[in-house]
Image (cartoon, rainbow, N blue to C red; front, side, top):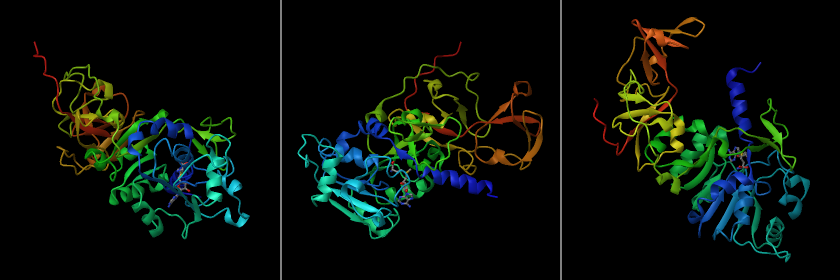
Length: 396
Ligand SMILES: C[S@@+](CC[C@H](N)C(=O)[O-])C[C@H]1O[C@@H](n2cnc3c(N)ncnc32)[C@H](O)[C@@H]1O
């Protein structure tokens, strides 16, 4: 029987085969036009026969004034055949179907002479050799040498990479100092390897997250859970995960729009953490306009974050127990009492998650007891500071 880890990794690997819809790519890419003029774009986890990233860039090649588009894939994906397949148009034997390809596009025009530019023109330009379509020497793994060479010769990397290799994938982009726009899971904000990049303003969130990405095309082999998937008018199976975001290091206007803050600080409404010198702000919209110190906010705050307005100080979450921001440690054995009253001895109060000390009468769910004091753990919090807080109104 598979263990929990096997099941988790199977689920993660399955997300490696979530294909992006053209409408979602168009919706986000609308805000980046200026970043593409005269640039070499590399879609590097994208089967040129079926990726909507390839389709987007090739059909907008002239409008974006691209210099070159390079597109490679790893292995033929299970959604092959659900979309207009260039393979069928360009031709080739059955034996070629499962091979990884590289497409290099330097021109796009009305090659079929039918008065418009579509995927048939793109296919024609491959067929007549004006653009290049060739088999990769290796398997198209993004860590391979062949791939890294292509990577180095490109100016922009845009794709939805395999979820299970996301940390490694971003590390490689950073190593080669690439400008990129990619899709990731919202939880990547809390990854030990990704959060420091966000904190140091080396990467940031794109225009939208969660429902902004309406859903992914999944292979027929994907098991449907409850009502999470539906079939669209093209017969494709769509899963609305609502848990993804765009991650980028290309500047966008939204990043310079400041949040309008209407609330004011009061110690009653914003409790102090017991283990950080910071206050708890449970909702981004409730950030007080006049608090000059450190505040803990939900990770979704980063969707509204402008470095002109706030400074990110750190992350309060389960891997950051040794952070210099942690001001208190607790005895190793702590009593955890769940909402049914079941007691367990735990050690997690020292893991870096912000804690709020509460009165016994206020307890509603799971809490922790140490030396007669009661605590609740918050969710992971981004620790921020307002760069120009309003002046506090004097207390009467
Ligand atoms: C989440 S899917 C997205 C596909 C496409 N970028 C899109 O958005 O429609 C990730 C893709 O990465 C491919 N992939 C998995 N492991 C890879 C690796 N080691 N190197 C390159 N690509 C890989 C998968 O086959 C899959 O096609």
